[in-house]
Each structure stands twice: as structure tokens, then as C-alpha cells.
Image (cartoon, rainbow, N blue to C red; front, side, top):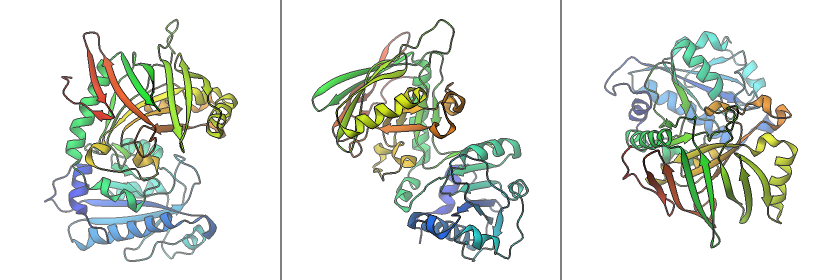
Length: 382
């Protein structure tokens, strides 16, 4: 059984008064195409959806609908038709074949959008992109939770208003700054990476969707910005330096120039893998995001899934950036199969041999320290 206050949680996420009644909730859930594709986490997610929906209705204050569909097999693809409304109290079918045999009348996904004000997508594959577009068109609010596991439940019980205050302050500073500099310590050697923040805005992602038409990920809790990628004619990106990345105890040193990784140093398998990946498609070398996750400040620990882990601490992403406000898009990759946005999170459990000694933001008027020894500082005035 879930052990947190659903009504309080959803009122924080969607911004309605917790004492109100008569709201309409909806859950989207995907099911594997066959039993071989299923996983324990996927099964647990379906069970969680059924339990949450039942609990909402049992309170007698709100309506709820569950809509299941066959897995699309990849993240952020359009939701497939048909979708099947599942009767509350029924077990969600385990495979697409079971779904086809379900007695409910199937319908198109566009027909069910209006049946809820607040949609939650607890899916194996991300539904964020299609639900962002649909929310703007149909006027609902949506929280997407791709790959969510029960280990992430503690991240849903924290104070989202406190998260919002922190990430909003950081996002304002990112917007004001023209440069961010990170100083890393990797096994006793320091390296600097300077990120060019000109021509960009910072964004806050607090996990709160308070206006009709808004949609985004949960768990959340980060401010982020895409470094300038050099798209303005005659204006090169100033992003340069060394980016150390650790994977299973092995550290690769990535030399960066004009916002691209130009060389990967290291003799191990990880360095070789990264070097070959970038050589096979140069778009993978793009510095796509500086993210400032804050959930680690609230005692949330890494679970081994990027949906949560990137919200814990500072992270740098490589690859696609246009969905975050940059310009590197799927069309810039040599093949659709190569399109990626990979986050590398500087958290003590994920990269135990690398720490951020200092992070500074430079504006036209001043320099502000926002990270010191892996801890955020919020004593600047934005």
C-alpha cells in the first residue's frame, strides 16, 4: 500500500485546493507487447496505478479513469491508438494481447483527454513529449513519470513549494549569467570547465504544473540551461575546458572546445566506448545541458534511474538539446537510432571519485559561487 497522502501530493503538483471536491483525475499506463518484455518494475507500476486510482475514488471526492495502451517501444513517441479505459477495481491487463481481449470499449487517445483535468502517465516509455503537446492543445495538466519505480516514492513526499523556491532562484541566476565555471577534483587533480551561457535562458522544473496546458516530469527538482552552441553567425561558443566523467570507477577526461567534446582521454573500456560513440556521430559530442538538481539537498538518494538521479545534483548532458531550449535536434544526428540526450550526474554515489570543488556564475557585474564542495549555496541575490 502507498504510504503517503495522495490528495496532498496531487494538490502540490497541480495546485488545486486540497479541501475541494469534484476534480477529475486520469492515469495513462502502457503495457508490454508480450510477457517476455515485462519486468518486475513494470508490473509494480501497473499495480501502483490501480491502487492510486482506487484510493482516489474511495475518498468519495474525485472521479478517476485509467487508460491503458500497448507499449510504443520508445520514449516520447506518440501515444498509440486504441486506448482502453480500465474499470476501477480491475487488474490492468498484463500484455497487449490481454488488452485486446479486455471487454472495455476501446477508443482513441484524443477522445479521452477531455475526461480528466489532471493526467498522470506512469509508463515504461516516456509520454512527456506527446502529453506536453496535448496539454497545450486540450488544456489539461499532466505529470509524466516514465520508468518510475517504487524506490522513487520518497521523492514524491517532499515539499514541492520549497523545491520550487530553490530551482526558481537558480534558474534566474542562470539566465542572468553569461558564464558558468565548474572546477572538478578527480582523484586529486583539478580540472576546469567553462560553459558559455550567452543567448540562453535558465528554466526551473519543480514538478508543479499549476496552469492548464502545462505538463512535465516527476520526480522533479532542477534548474537547467543549454550552453550556447555557436549557432549565431560569426559568434563561436566559448564553452571549453576538461569534463571528467566517471563510470563504474573509471574516469574519462573529455576535452571540450566550442561546446563540443573534441578528445576523450583514457585507456579503459569506458573511455574507449565514449570515444567510439562520439566518433560514430559527432552530434553526441554536443554539450546539451547544465542541470542543477536539488533533491539531494532534501536527503533523496540515487536509485540508478536517470529520471530521479539527475534531479539530485549538478549534471551535464551530451547530445540533443532542442527540447530544452537549444538547437541540436534529431535532424543533426547521422541516424535516428543515434538520437540521444545522456545525463552525467555528479553525485557521490554515482561518481564517487569526482567532486565539484566550486561552481561559479559570472554576470556582467559580479561572480557568484553557487556550488562549493558538492553543496549548493543560496546566499546570492538574484
